[in-house]
Image 1 (cartoon, rainbow, N blue to C red):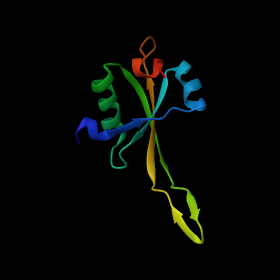
Image 2: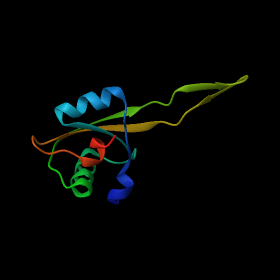
Image 3: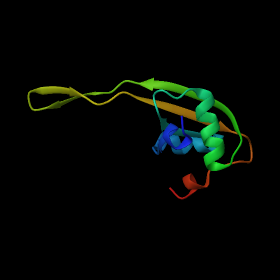
Length: 94
């Protein structure tokens, strides 16, 4: 899988902003990607050293539109821990 297909977008919330102090960054990733592919993609894209990758499958929430019940799509979240002293500059601007 190509590295630009593995990482879909960074997740920016209050919780993820606080986790950046511990060098942990959150991403939405492709559901078929494994931990090794995610780690390699982050290292190549942002030129940092990855120490650990944790992943979880997130179930889509149920949403109601009038009388019809629907669902959002399922997705995969990755928490990437970087080596001490390294950071991703894109997150510093947010």
